[in-house]
Length: 293
Image 1 (tube, rainbow, N blue to C red):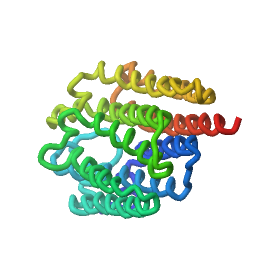
Image 2 (cartoon, rainbow, N blue to C red):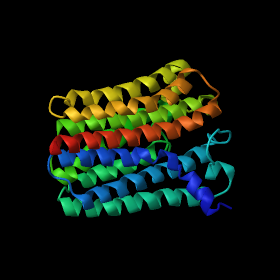
Image 3 (cartoon, one colour):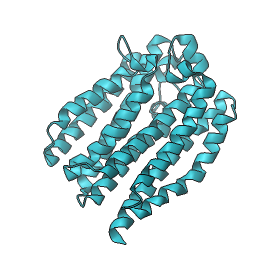
């Protein structure tokens, strides 16, 4: 029977930066538009974190009942290990989605952005459809595409829009960078799982393009994520601070490119999450200092 510690491990906390970073960057872009709202930012953060945990439980359930997680390197899988029943894991996932939708409804009421309710429904469908349903898109190599869109573009620019009722070039470039970092984290995860995914018929992008190309793509995504904000340097000179994150990319990139054993890739997930949060902090500082100095 799953303990509280098992449920926490099953939530895969190392992936939470995927939800936290876009809200930080989106709020920084809202601040740049002189429209930062702390309460709306907090609600956006709750929504993003709840969706991320919900996605993790949904993946645990769907991969578990398909047998994809029967032999897997990494954190505990509640369903595949038998620690929790498939039904309880599914309920946990939809409980998180439901709580996220309630927070989203409150955010929409406060901001008056009613069309975003449809975006929220789309987020739930995308979260479940990654590994759930009859034709999960995560099994045909589209996982990184949807992560880029929902944890990058939608989460970041949605955060900005609910505060400023507008978006900007800064919010767009920040969203693209965050989307690339989120995709890099998923790519690292999928490179680790190539042998078991291939055996289970799960054709992730890493499986489709091969081990070597997948590892190189990880490094390219990190590099592009740090370089894109430099397009803002004319109006936001302090955005150069994002380059301070570059040293943090060296170790995970080295591990990926050196072709280390798959269990050695587990720390790369955490390191990529740290890169995402530090990027978000540097991006925010760049926006704030541009306004203040």
